[in-house]
Length: 357
Image (cartoon, rainbow, N blue to C red; front, side):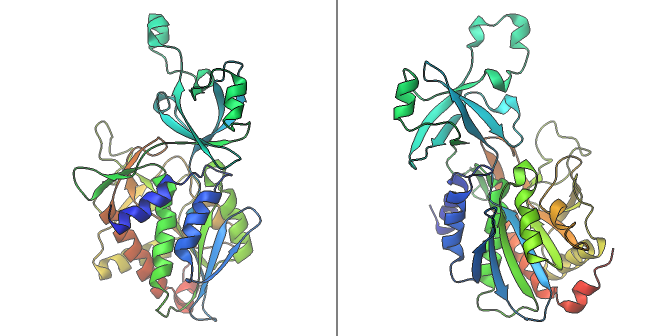
């Protein structure tokens, strides 16, 4: 595995459902060592402050650490683990998935999501999606005591198991939790690139917590920073798979990063969006635009901070998000890093003061 894919794999395969982001933060913190002043807010979001011009505007770059996951809710007498979902799961993608339970000891217990066998269901039941409340995780324990001896306890976090690998086209990668280790990776790459460069602002690279359960970390981090402008880095919906209609999603994997014109939590600052399009054209970066009719991003919380923060979402189209495995393009990721880096160099005081929609 090459160095870039090794880094992405380490980030994506770390266990980090909302509220349990510590292992992901540890990976990212190691990668960000030496890029700036690192601190944590009281909710657990990591903030890296890199000063270019001390009199320049505060530029917030935000990617969220957390992924959708599960939590141990109870263990029955036969040793089967029942769970609470964390974030937006769809029952249809959950059954038969291999999962990892991270115990309080720090050990990993593997299991598989199970339910009744289809052979015992009547024809009407077979047509229905299995209710998540009737699913369970089989860890191979014979009883509750054996499951507890493995270290499993109520409240332990659970994530899918999906090794990070290149597909037949080496630009295409499958991984878990690209939503939103993508954003964290972009923040890290941009900050690493700024180590030896001047920039006309103060950059705050932020890895937020608990985005998947209500944009919570973005809210506390933005209140702590008080940014003048913000870029939220999060994945977008790929519209290039069978059955997808243009009105559902338009962005295509491999065609460049995507600027959102709308999502369920944000109408972006139009001057900032137009600036991003202009910078992309000047830098020769292919970009796409799309709308996300449902769902939100960290920008939804950030832009409401204080008197308001001009904000924009820069994503990459990703297939099969909010499932155990996502598919994305490395070239889209590289384009996003280039675009965000170029924007940082353009966001001086005069430009930011002029960001009026």
